[in-house]
Image (cartoon, rainbow, N blue to C red; front, side, top):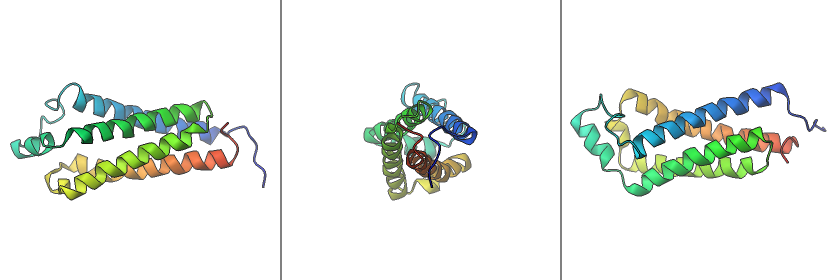
Length: 143
């Protein structure tokens, strides 16, 4: 079945949702990486703060790759560029690397409830972004 090469309204709504989501991710990464983790960890126990501060520097870089690749994927989607698929995949891989590390150090037991929610939500939305980008590329909406 042939598809119109002009995106439907739902494409723009979904792409803008993912853009806003990734902008929040960039904000969270910036707060943690640039401003220090003190502001982010106000309600945390001393044990939780020590645990988060023990994360290796490569984790912060992987986290940055995840959020910035996701952001650039969304921008590419809005400009209808096929590179969005590759960028979304790169973001997903970086998210998986971060989550595998968090699982191996048993981060779940140290996380606050909000962090546990995002531990699950971030990979789910990363997968959905990648699948969305692939889907609209197959429809011929990306050039």
